[in-house]
Length: 220
Ligand SMILES: Nc1nc2c(c(=O)[nH]1)N[C@H]1C(S)=C(S)[C@@H](COP(=O)(O)O)O[C@H]1N2
Ligand SMILES: [Mo]
Image 1: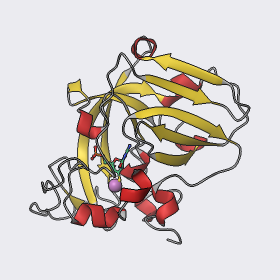
Image 2: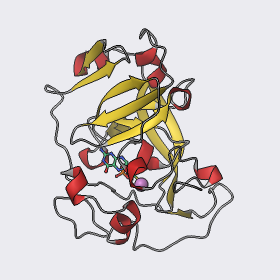
Image 3: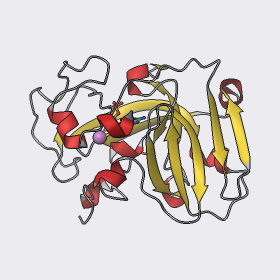
């Protein structure tokens, strides 16, 4: 589904398609563009909306059926149910987010569990992970970009639960990288000793995706 229906990410944004279900609504992309502020990485513009960008259909997963699994490079699996996840210490996060299609949103507020917490007791020699989502979306990250308080398993947004179109019940939040790395409807990590491209990384987007270095496309 993802492969077949996939457009380039920038085309997806330009088309104003909200998601794969009823893609006619323009939100954020057609709106008034505000002047760039010093807080913006190069080439980004500010939006006050919260655009929805999804390749393929929105995933509806009930928390009763939800689980999150970490699979190590040796094949060991550790799984958290929704109740397991809710029992972990969580925190509020306030951060800016930057989409490679050039919108940035400042001061977004989230709630979730640091990725450090779920990796803490996992025995691994891996340096990379592949994040997997319900629906088949993937994105790759070096472990150093998700450890030391740089990434979260986010299930709250702006004082409420994370809305489904934004990846609820739970998404990855890696705000210091372009937002395609923040996989919506997250359901697991596979730990890897050698790096592999995820979904958009395999379509010509940059392997790393640091917005301050404008790592948009392969070769940037
Ligand atoms: N599962 C999944 N996660 C995803 C995507 C997707 O298509 N599927 N799109 C990515 C992209 S390109 C962006 S910019 C953000 C958009 O998140 P939002 O829709 O909450 O703004 O989600 C990222 N995570
Ligand atoms: Mo994006």
